[in-house]
Amino acid sequence: MLSAKSVFQEILANDESFALFCSIAASGESQGGWENARIAALVPDSERELVPKITRHGADEDKHGRIFHALMKKRGLDPVPVPPETDYTMLLEKNGIGLAHEHLKRDERLTVQDIVMYLSHSRVTEQRASEQMELLRKHFADDPDIGRAVRQISNDEDNHLAYCHEELLRFAHAGHGRAIQRTLRECALAEIRIYRDVSLAVMANMGRILGWSRAKSGVLAAGIHALYAYERLGGWRRMVSLRMPERRDALGGPASTAPEFA
Image (cartoon, rainbow, N blue to C red; front, side, top):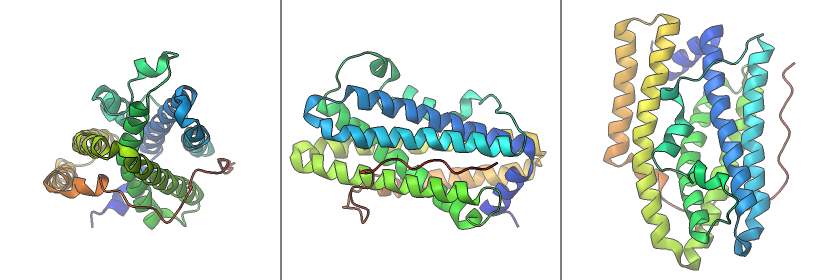
């Protein structure tokens, strides 16, 4: 039976597809780490209290990148080039989601509006990350090879999502509510399209590596298109709601270290 679990099992069981999966994930996490580090360095003076949280967010992303590299190393694998059509983070940036890298490379202080935009974009993308890791956690939390990594990253992504909710609510109460809702909607509608395109590209690459039949690839592609249709018709709204999280001050402490996989 074709299911999310069976597809992931097939990808994880093959060295070439596993290396591609981990390389794509590590690349995205490393880019996120760089972005957060630059944002932390450029926070406006009025929002300096956010610096430790943004710094921890970036440190977590860097840690996740190291975890994926460690998983490859444990199996004696080297990272592989990431096909540009599968680079979710860079495609988001090219489509105007998140602060532009050219902006972040300049040593100019960000504005409060920039921070509101950063948090709004993060709220959408962290929703996706949290859901993806929850799916992996559901099926592989007890896996002897990747279970610890899945649990660690899933917990971190939940923290990141809680942090975005809490900080955006603070900014909304400070008078930025309309800008936040407008940005959240624009970002969510763009993200679901990019996620669809990246998912199709990843599955095409995995299908080539694993020798999937045209019928199997077609079923998986149909599932991706069905998810997009659901999200376009209203599923995107889960990405724009704001509520006070149960995890308060989720990024208020130091980042945890990456587990050892040797």
